[in-house]
Image (cartoon, rainbow, N blue to C red; front, side):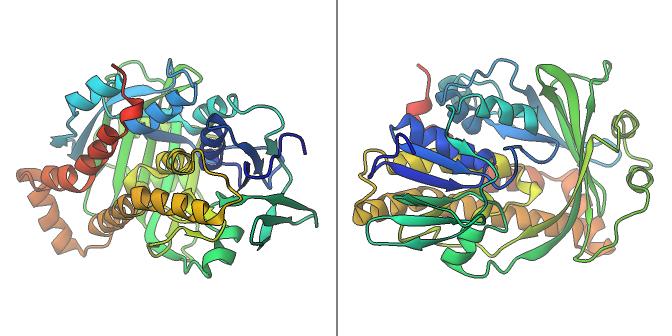
Length: 405
């Protein structure tokens, strides 16, 4: 294996956005990186996604052009009938320092991921290599594959998803649990008379439906989704389109129009959402995790792909300049990474779970009271400001190396 220098060897299990971000970040700092993906190719699963300002700034630092990467969006919250509850405010100082307008951009997941993969040098990614475990030694780690082969590295990064084999060996049973929601995530081509650069997150007493503008390979379109109550073992509807159509009966436009413009065979993805208890440690010895391998995120955070991309950036920054043969220096880098990420990410995970329960698990009388409060008071605005925006904006302001002056 060429360019595989002791002290610089970073092995990454998994080939999703978090893994590729981690690879790009370590390559930028001069490390030798190998990404091991079990599938025949690296690909991002799912439809569209929202990427926030700090995530876009990180991708820009890797060399990714932000031209036509996504659609700038002003985000509103509303009820089922279109009554506005709040507009998510922008922080003008964040905009000034990062030089990216707004806060969230809609993009087709596969389009954004392809732009990331285009930055990865040849020879870094090895597909059809499923990591099944590892043997840890004093000065290295031996990565084991399903095909019986092994690779020796200095550190191993678990980026292999919510059912990560590496994370399970390192930290034990993840104790996955169903979060009580099912997600229908879809996208469609552009509809000309829907206002541009506007996204709406709307609720009735038990469902959420939302839409955002997005770009797909530079072409405009819309991402939209429906969140419904769910449970483990819940049967799948025989006719998904009829099922979602029934949920959207009486919903304010443009939700019904977006549904009709969507091909349910090729443009809709369905997930039952699982999570794990929050972890206080994401590392042990020479092993460390990023993304869903250590913190699967409910869609209520609108942040899963973004958090994984951020993790890779922070991890490589924490280990920059470290001789990875030195386990004490590695442990110190892991501790710095965890100090910067664990509490921040756990807060967003837990707030997303709280929001999911608040919007989808309350009995009808309490749900109607909740909706009355959200329709006629600033409670929801204050909740989002304190629990979501403020912490994310503070993090962005602290990424001074990404500011543009």
